[in-house]
Image: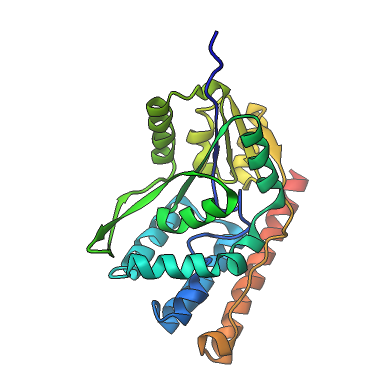
Length: 267
C-alpha cells in the first residue's frame, strides 16, 4: 500500500509569527516613501487593535479594502527590495521558535509544509523563504507592468481559504485525512475541519471553544512574546496628542483583553 502524501498547512499571522504580516513592514514602507504619515499612523492603530483583540470577519474585509487601495501603483520590485532587505530585523525576531521547530519537524517526517494566508503573497513569500518553506498559497493581487493595480484577484479568508486547501490537495494528491492544519483564528475553522489533524495555535476565544468541543489539539506558542511596537513622534512625525491617542487605544485594548480572560475563567 502506497504511503499517503501528507501536507501541513500553516496559517501565518499569530500562528507562525507573533505579529501581522500585513502591517509588519509599515515603518519600512513609510521610510521609503510608499505610504504617508497618516497612513503610517492608521497602520499602527489597526495593528495594535488586531494584536490585542483580533479582527472580526467584517474588519478583515475592511482592512483588505483599505490596504488594497493604499498599495495601488506600488512597484513590485520596490516592495521585494524592502521586504527582503529588512526581513532579518523586522520579521525574523517575531517568528515563534515553536513554529519554526514544528515546521522543521514536519519536513523531517517527509511532510510538505504549505503556508496559507489571507495576507498578500508578495508579503508572505519572503517570510516563507526565511523559514525554508517552498510553497505559499495566499491572497493574490493584480499586477500590471510591474505595479500593483489595487485589485484583489483572490482573497483567502474563511471558506475561501478552505476551498484553496481542498483545491491544492486535489491538484497535488494530498491525503487530507492524514494531513495537518494550524491556525489561531475562528475564521479558519472551515480549513481546520478539512484535515484529520487540526491544531488550534494561540487560539482566539471562539476557536478555543470550538477546538475544545471537537477535541482538537491546542497549542500555545510563547517565544517570542507578542509585542506591539508603537510609533514615536520622531519615526512618523506626529504630535504628542496622537501618541497619547494611540496609547489610550492600546491601554483600552489591554483592558478588554483582560476582561475577556476574566470572563473565561469565571465561566
